Length: 590
Image 1 (tube, rainbow, N blue to C red):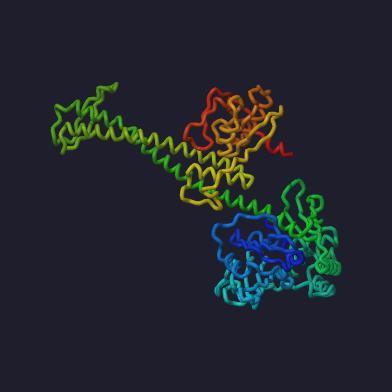
Image 2 (cartoon, rainbow, N blue to C red):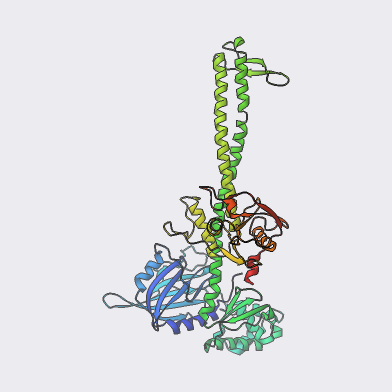
C-alpha cells in the first residue's frame, strides 16, 4: 500500500525543518543515483548533509538522509545540468509554494566574473504526477525529470525555455484562507451522514487521508465518524487547530507500526492515535528522520523486488530455452533409436546380394535373426548396385549412431543446466535482503549465464567477490550450524567451512540449502540431527511438504566435481531422515 501522508501539511513541516538546517549552506556536490532522484550535498553549520530530492512516482519525498546510494558511472543529463549551475552555490531557502505539495529550493550562484545568479529547483510531490523542474530566476524552465509536450492531456506544459507554472489545484479550497465560520458553513452544506474524513479530503486542498482521519479522531475519538457525529462547527475548529500547529511549527514526527510488525506502514508530522491498539507509534527526533526511515524500508523492498524480477525473468527465459532444447533433443534421440533397424536392413541386403540386380526397387528377405524368421521388405535405390545399397544403409546407421552418442551427451548437459536453473530459482524464492539478491546475481555472472546481458545494477566485473553472508545459529546442544541459502553460500558452507568430520544435510531429490552441523569430530545427539534436517527441509523446494526426506553424511563423503556448477556436489555413505520442515532460523531471531 502506498502511503498518503506526504500532503501539504507534511510539506510545510519538512520545509520548515530543512530551511532551518540548510539555509545559507554551500552546495558541495550533486549526485543523481536514480533517474528521478537528486542528492544535494550541502555543508551548513560546520556539517555536510545529504538532501534527498526525489520525484519518484511511487515514493516522492524531500528530506535529509544518512543513506548513500550507488551512483551510475556516467552522470545523467539533469545531474550534469545541476552541477554546472549549482556546484559551489548557496542554498538560500527551502520553502513551500502556497499551501500545496510543491517545494521550492532557491540557490544563489556566481560565475568566474563574480556575477550573481539565482536558480530554483521545484519538487512537485504528487504521486504518479511527481516531477522535479529546474528553473532560472524568472522561472524559465532549464531542465526537468519529466517533460510534457503540447499534446499533454493535462494541458500543462513542461518544456525547456517555457515559463514554469504551478500545478492545477483541482478546484479544492485552501483552509488557511478560510475562517472557522466559513469552514463550518462548507461542512454544513454536506450530507451529515457522509464520512467526515473523506469529506475533508474532498473539499480541502493539501490534506491526506491520514491527516484528515487524525483531525476527525481529535473531535470524536474515531476516524470513521460522519459529519453529523463531529458537527460542522467542531470539525471546522479541528481544521483551524491543525493549521495553527503548522503555523507554530509544533510538530511531533512519528512512525506508525502495525502491532507485531517491524516495518512502519505510515508516518506523520503529528502523533497518530486513530489506529488504537492495532498499531504503535514511535516518535522521531526530526521530520526528516521519520521520512527517511519510512522510505528507506520501501526503497530497499522496491530495489529487491526489481532485482528479483530481473533475475526471475532471465531464469524464466533460460528455463523455456532449455525445456525446448531438451524436448527437441529427446525427439532426435528417439529417431536415432532406429539406427539398429538401418544396420539390419544393410545386413539383409548383404544376405540377398546374390539375387539382387541393379535397378531393383526392393528385395524381400527372411530375417533369420528374429524368432519367427519373418520376411522383411527392404527398399532399394535402383540407381545403385546391390553392394552400394548395403553400404548406404550402413553409412546411415553409423551416422545415427554417432548422432545418438552426441545427443545423449548434449541432453545430459541440458538437463544438468535445467537442474541448476531450478536451484537458482529455489534460492531466489527465499531472498529477503539486498545481499541475498546480490549473491545470486554474482553467482549467475560467475557461472557464465546470460553472457553479454547486463543485470540492473550488477556487480562490476573487476570487483573482488565478497565472502558469502552465510546464516549461522546454534543447535539444541550448542553446536554451530551453518545454512547456505543460495548456491554460492552452499559451496562456501560445504567446501570452505566444512571439516571432514562435520555433518552435512541436504533435501533429497529437490533443490535446497546445504546445512552444516559443525561438530568438530564429536557425535552430536539425535535432536541436533533432527534440528538440522528440519532446517534443510524448510530451506528447499520441499518446504511445503508434511514429511520430507533429507540425506545427511559426513563432509568427507561429500565431493564437488571439478568444473561443476555452483552448489552441485556428489555424496555417498549417507543416511536419510524423514522430518517435517521447520524454520529454526526465524525462531533464533526471536
